Length: 327
Image (cartoon, rainbow, N blue to C red):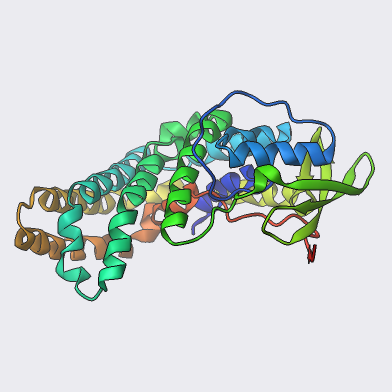
């Protein structure tokens, strides 16, 4: 992943300070008061997010962290070519439309002949959520240069993060996995030791082994200790990487990049127009060369080949000192 999107991804990962993972869709974006006590603060975030309030993750961050992430997004927006960036996401959006429209042909294509009936059934069940994930991403603030320049963290987490985690939840269930947040609204938390700046909390979630986690108090918010200790250096490095990014390099390759994107968009149009399986399979074969061209030009896209990774909610953050202990 190139520097711009490493830092965008880091910004999003930072937003998931406590337990970002797949949860449920947002049903209530009303603000919740986050208590001062460490166990109550953590329980509030866990319960709210498990019940669909993605915005609670942004609320759980110290104000300075929110400012750092917002500044990173705005800086990233100033370091890209808007036309290339926006057209890239328009092409991804077009792909999602085709994926949604041509599901039957996709499942019956020659490319799927090696799949078992069970695998095809899983894919068929998963396609709506896959389309939803992509559409959530390409309609978010991260999908346009203007969106990056005017990034609003609270709005982003209230909407995009909540929607994204809804589809993650659906995909996890289709894969036969239990919800990551199953039972989190019934978690039992106990403060083992604490002072004004640090707290060790034992967490017990029904159906899981209990574990201990260390949190640091930062600007009236309880943050996993490892994140708090690494934050300043990571932000400084992120800013340095972005500042070192040259827009000129991208611009020199802009004609080739735009031509490849236009070609890919044309292929997608042909695939969408297919009315028979044979037409679809032939159009799909025609997409291989343009796609390879885009991959070969990946560096010229200024990191846009990693854009999908940038909008994914982070993998679950294991708080500092979290060593499972048997109940």
